[in-house]
Structure formats: structure tokens, C-alpha cells
Image 1: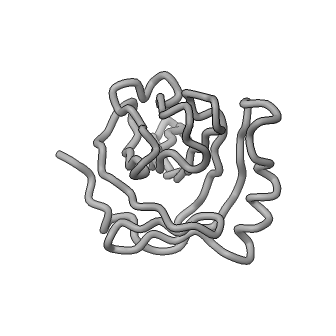
Image 2 (image 1 turned 60 degrees about the vertical axis):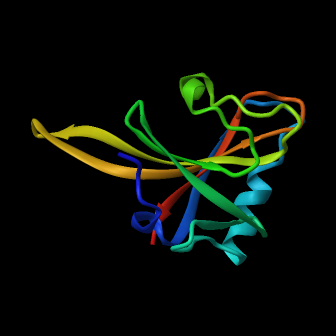
Length: 137
């Protein structure tokens, strides 16, 4: 069953980033700072507003405990999601959006929280080697 974008509508607060793609990738710290003035949002029609641009999200499914929405035009390959999400090597920018549930144990009880991420790629790279993480408002 495909995830419903309506479960993800609303605004998001940026709370971190990770990048291992080298100098060709955008400066994630700058993106994080920009998101303070222009927060990420997702509308009921599947439009994600991220870092000054609007992207159409496409429901892909779930894999490796993550709910995945690709970005239209990115060339995202759902089948290779475990390999940093293969994408079109000529694409640059946001590639896919995920919700990942993190588990931990407190006093022998399972607890969890959700992390939302926008994964990025750089022109010339067929993987997505950076992400910006969010919490849902």
C-alpha cells in the first residue's frame, strides 16, 4: 500500500543535516539557515516547498523502515533505495523525502520518534549524498 501524502501535510522545522558528497554538493548549513526564514511545507496536493522551490512528491512506498516519496523529475530509482537512492546523474537538488522511525529502549520499553528528511544530489552524481532533517510542527 502506498503512503498517503495527506498524512504528511503541514510545516516542518529543520533540525540538522548530513553531507558526504564533497564540494559539488550545496552547503547544507546555508540551506539550514535559509529554512529558518522560509520553512519547508507539504500541501495536500503533494507539493513540497523546500529552500525556495516547489517540488511535486510522488508516493513510492516503504523500504528499510522508511516511508518514501520521490520528487518528480529527479530520476529517483525506488528499487535501489538502499544504495543512497539512485538518481539521474544530470539532476541537481532535492531528490526524495522520507519519514524514518527511530527506535530506542528506556527501562526495557521500546520508544520511538520520527525523523523527516529531504535527500539531495549534485549534478554528476548518481546517488544522493546529503540530507536535511526535520521535525513535523
